[in-house]
Structures are given as structure tokens and as C-alpha cells.
Length: 255
Image (cartoon, rainbow, N blue to C red; front, side, top):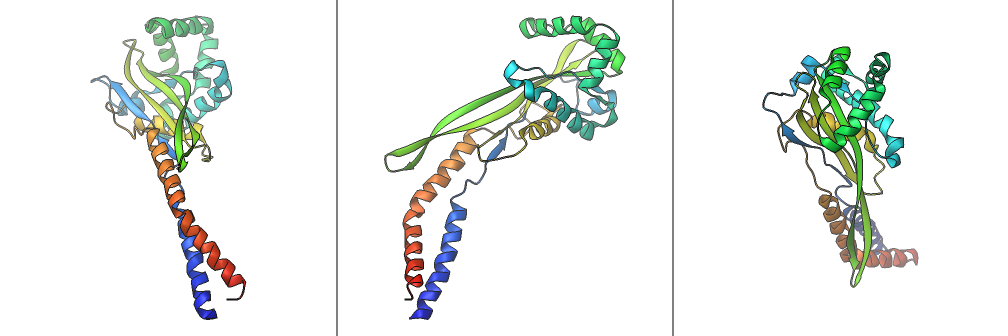
């Protein structure tokens, strides 16, 4: 009889471990990076062949702590993907200061956010000084989505998912126009401790220059669905866990 219960204890432990594993969400992060508009004349390899300057990342005051790290991360990932023809935000700032056009640049960028008209003369001068054909315009944004996750009969809890992303355009300095636009971004559950800045920059480097809708283009709803499925599994497994605990207690009592 004792051997039978020892066997039951071992089986119970195995079931317990499997149950706990099965109740974890299948995914805790999604890559929302996605290509948007692309000019027919522009191809991804042009970045490597003709060079690109990464303009300082824009963002509101609440994003200030992320702007410089994001610019550095984008430079690192772009240099890895496209080589030494990539110029950093620091290079851009240095050129603006050397040519005494930093104030003109700031006004022009502010006007662009309102009018959508690229300041062609400044862009051309900046591109010539950097010896690149393209400039990368990025705006750092974030969103928080909420959803009700059902945890059992007549009960639910609110879960939030945070997404960090950069809305991006590639400007051709010769024609003063947008030749590509898209986004790099990730969304994750709170428990996921991934470095979202690095992952966002990596996602952007992977999709820049690609055709419209190319890229992972994952949706935050996939995270909610995975979490809901895991929660339902937990609820359904509650009876099985109770059975496991009972067997362990019986074994501890010497049966």
C-alpha cells in the first residue's frame, strides 16, 4: 500500500509541475514593428550604399529619459545592419553646431510636425555635411492598453499592456521628400523584463526599407489572448491541483 501511495505521490508531483507550466502565457511580448509606405525608387540596400544620418529622436517631456538611449540603440542596430555609412545623432548634432544652424533646424523640425513639409534646404545641407543621402526622422511614442481577463466564475481582473514604439520616416536629402515610413516597436506584459529600447531599435532596423506591411506587424491582442488562455487553464486545473495536494498530504501522513 505504501508503495502504491509513493507512486501516487511521484505522479502527483509530475502532474503539478506540468500543470504549473501549462498555466503560463505562451507569449509575453510581441514585435509590433511594421513597414508602411515605401517609394518605388527606394530600396533597403540604398541605406547601406548611400548612407543615412540618424536625427535626434523626438518625444514629449515624459519620454525624455528614453530619447537619448533610443537614439543610441537605433544607431547601434543600424550600424550592425548597414555598416559604417550610418551617422549617429551625435554626429548630426555636431554638424548642426559646427554650421551654426541648430536653431534653424529646431524651428524647421517643429514646423514639420505641423505642416508636414520637409525643410529641404536644411535637409540638403545636413546630408551634404554628413555625406549621406538619407536622414532618419523618428518620434518616440508609447501606449497602454487595458483588457478584462476572466479569472473564474463571475470574476475578472484588469490587465495592462505597454507598447513602446518609434514612428519613423526616411528622408531623401536630394529630393527633400519621404521615401519610406513605418514603425519599430514592442509590446509586453508587465512581468516581462525585456529591454524594450533595444528590442524596439532592433525591430526598426529589421523592417526599415521593406515593402508595406512587411515585418512581424504583431498586435497587442495576441498578448491578451495568450494571457486569457493561460488564466482559463489555471481555472480548469484548480481541481487537479487540489487532488495533487491531497495525495501529497496523504503521503506525508504515512499512508
